[in-house]
Image (cartoon, rainbow, N blue to C red):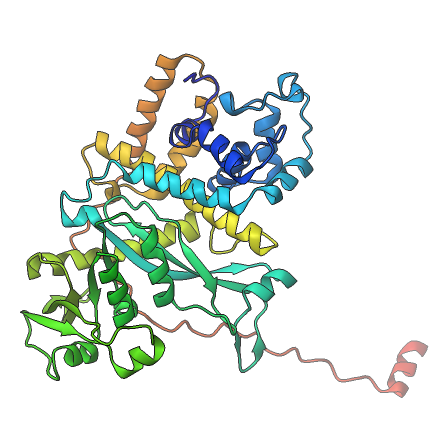
Length: 457
């Protein structure tokens, strides 16, 4: 493959998603081959917009105008003669025409290709996926408010539409599966537990799930068992006591238990069979918190690793919070900009696809430096990659490009996170009320007679 004018992430995108992949999708969906803005180009530009800090439509169009897309460039006469318009209307219409099926297929293909080299049977950490949910803000448009209603309280309804999203990230690499989502409020609101049952169908065979107490309900554990997935869930002391038969085992214990659905579970999930049961272990341990004090940790698991190993692995659950921060803060996904549900879904999925491409560069840099991928800062790797893109786009010699790429990996490997013997402690506290300015004291009104006397002087 020619490396002429091929940026780093674009070259990786071309390797993971070859042109034949889009040809097959177009044939299956009976889609015409568009002129300048093909489906492949639109997918790449939407990913690039999310990864770039100033990813506007105008800047995305300039990649086509200035011939920065290498072999993916269209064969259209206007492209060959460099007569492509700089106006953004063509790309905007192409984004709206892009079928959601293609976006979903691209997101799944990138995740499948990048996780394929990972040996999911080599060890527990290589097959664990972290589950957690979050919310994202959407613009206030009639279609988005109807699909994702805003929240409300005693003062009335909020302004912004809100979407609930559930994500599953690989513990070792941080790669993200295609997320599930739904409305957070309203009559059609979805729960994170319900979304968890959906996202299991998108994970590779032999995976194991690690999640906090919000997911430690019977329906999620039962769905994991049906999919042949192991689980490692933190559970509340009350639920642990109920599973154990009415008493909580002592600290540092490991008990075999049978988790059966409660009456509330059967009311919420009438499809559960009469003999539904999840065989597992109840682990109770005293662990040291961030403040140095010991607290009781209760875990339910269907895995067979020793108790000490599972308790130590559960400490890695915080990695999921850092991944969500990378998505919402570094990639600015705390607030989506699309004005319709279809475009918001495409924007969300292609942001995850671009995130996975940066994660793949992070994995390559960590492998070269003999580090774990999560020892590198995601934001630092993204900064290195996006800064190197314009320079790599000017290289035409394959050997020179490869040498520059290796240098990029070395720079990315320098973004190593500091060694902290103890996690930073940020205890929760209530923010103080904002300062108030003193009320303005108006001067007393001047009597009319006094004013007339002043004018006469």
